[in-house]
Image (tube, rainbow, N blue to C red; front, side, top):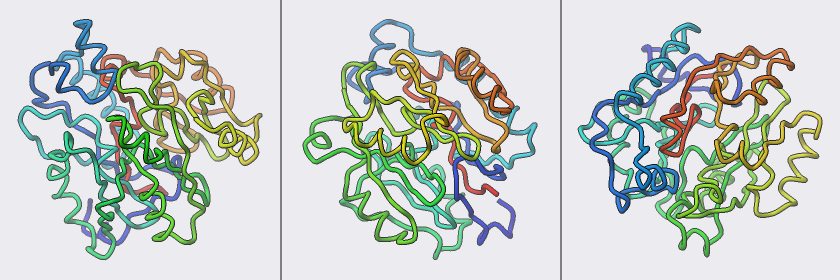
Length: 309
């Protein structure tokens, strides 16, 4: 960030013009983990089937992502490299709401990733950095801003204590409500599975994603409570929603990334979604991210936006 950025954090949507973002890094992710070291079912599946991505493939895909961001003159900041640590998915380490940076309380397996972005956090005015209460657990992939709403994927106490993939609790929803009283904060319960990647929704951005100014992508089968789907349909309008099939949800078609209301980065494989976006006059920058997706995340998971205009 430039010297003036200490006071200029600004994220009020998922789709505003992107000016500054933290992008994860593919360096030195270490050897293929064993199954006991995996903490999401997608990674477990690909380790078990000898299809876990290689460091070369991960690096190639992230380089292609970086090139698109550079094309649109986005300031790209990177974590410091830590040996033998997967640092691809920067999204979960923190998030910005309005002009405040919140440091996530992430699972212990990933706690070592946060010191790698301290050099970025230290450039933010201390009054604009918020540490979340220790009882409130949250990862950035579960936080989505839509106009005056903040949507949070959250797990009830039973699910939160049962599943490794339940990363955000309702204490975090209450914390966000209390600290952003001008926002309408809503928690959505999602289906979780530690063992079956097709029955698990790791984060909210794996089943819901705003695009452009009034549109969104949704996977209704991921929501435990059908009233939450009905709420989103009423708020956004059914005709403004792109409904993912179960297979499309399983391949995380919602996990695209907006550079502006008119430009998104998406995977080449997402043909039905990309066609719909183009019909809505949205430019789709298509790149291959199929190998990184095997680790349980895609484009949005790799990014932590700091400034959107």
